Length: 270
Image (spheres, rainbow, N blue to C red):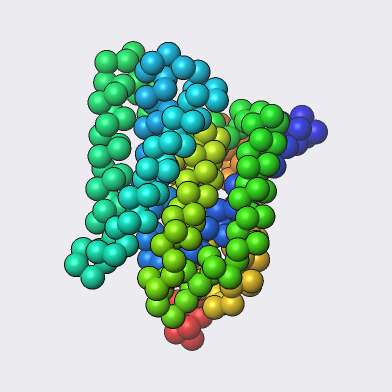
């Protein structure tokens, strides 16, 4: 028993760190109605890692991280300066285009690589169970810096997403800073848990919280609780069933949200 607990310690710490920052950004994403933006940014970051590997760089090295972050920042800039076309073209269309193009580019990049299929699978589901303490601590430090910056400028960022104009009347440069810090978070997350879990950590706990309350502080608390419970259950199931941790947590959180929604619907009918 103690052996299992020691084995799951750092994956659990990583999940706590990931849930902490992603639920916060998820509140913004849900309110703005740009649900798939993190999936798109995560795929862009994954393309950056793929490009680094193709030129012989180590996927966990600084150069590979900078390659991923650079492309993610470009994606963030695109999303910032396309918000103005919302009246003519939904921004979700731009987000979808960026995701599709970056996904196709990653597939093309590894099409002649013997390990191409394994690389794509790793980028999708990550390797949470094998995460190292060093990676967790570095990621936690980066997230703490981002979180502190957002706390200092919380009125600006909350006004962009929760203001009466939905953020469109806000300062575009603050919007760019929002996407830039979001890109830093997503780039770090993809290396640990993969594209799919990044998306689920961002959206599912935030949707759960939004169904319960309108108060931002309470949404954070409910989202954190939901994400942590789902992570613990998913990690335990991945060990028992011998399945990938990232994919198991994704399915667990999805089922938890489905069961809650069904229960809520039945209770409302009664």
